[in-house]
Image (cartoon, rainbow, N blue to C red; front, side):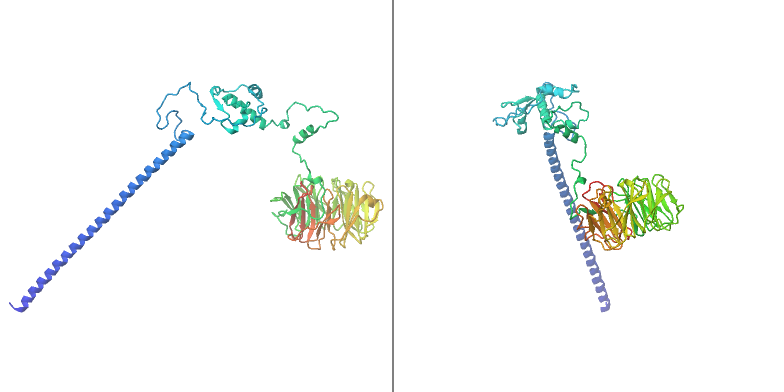
Length: 557
């Protein structure tokens, strides 16, 4: 055999042996992998078994604790988790109940010593017989027979010792215990006889020397009227207690200047009107002030709007020959005018008498036009020497005050329609505003120079020309003035001055120092009004808002 063939045979043998070795190695590696997988499975199973055992142990412990808690709760408060069955507690044998056995027993283990406490003989005012009388002879629906057999130790518990009648008293029956508790309650909470409106027992008759304070107290306690009425207290000068509330027209602000604001006689309804030709009504509560109604007057920018004092109508006017009437009951708008026999260019300014009978309009050439509030017809005219600029009623509507370009104040008697008094307004060149107090005892005049004079009307009519006080806190035209209901505050304002409004303390004639305050801006005030009880003050300005203030001195709106 040649060398080449021998080498080939050897090579084949070597290759075969290598192949066999490779197969053996593969088989070994597979066996190792299987062994490792088996070990991991055993470990997982072992860990699962340990977790199960641990969970079982925890559950058994938890169940044991819950059972112990249930037994403790049942021993303290009775059976909570099962229907109530007497004598079937855990670990106790079921025994038939003894009907003759008492339901209660007295624990005398702690009552060895005797503590001495004060005894009040008058504590128990109600005995058994008195208790029966106290329930007005009515028979009880059910009587517990066990009360007779039950005994209560009133010495063991300290708070029950007050129920003793004698010093050495220890045990009392259940019925006696109940009666004494009722008596103690009646003593601590006596019957409020003053609240019994149907009682027939009359008050004892008192002699002339004795006071009937008891009767007065009963009369006071039988109603909920205020014992101290703050409104009757005098308002002090200096600082005014007030707070700013939500704007009165916050739900529907005006797109133009506000020319009129006024409260209804009920103190809850308020109107606001201005140059945007709208008349709006708001319910004033100081929190939301919801809008009730809005009326559009297309051909009349409103310069003045006012309720009739009886609250039935609203009169609106502008720079027109006519005016409008809005009936609050029928919600109907009526157009009145032009007035027969008069050629008036404007009826923008007017005043309504307190008796709701007459409407006085400022006319041309010194004329005052008197209109019937009922028929809306012209019933008469009054003539001044100069031009008419302002009007104010007095004496419940029987008299009328007027002022104008000649600087005089006129007093008119509407019964005879004659001037009963005429006098010069001190230091005034031209009067442009007037107002009177509710009782007509005071009146104030405002001029173009910002001067405000306050007069006592009786003295003025008697010939005294000097005013009680001249107020010089404003320097521009006085546009609006008004006394509050008790004439302790006089509000004055000027349309031409920013924040041009002052509140005057009338008894001292001093301006309140903290009004309007540095944090509040009144813009350019154009109109104002007090609520009937002076609890609210509203101010309408050129920005279309109606500011609302609460005056804390006055309780009622």
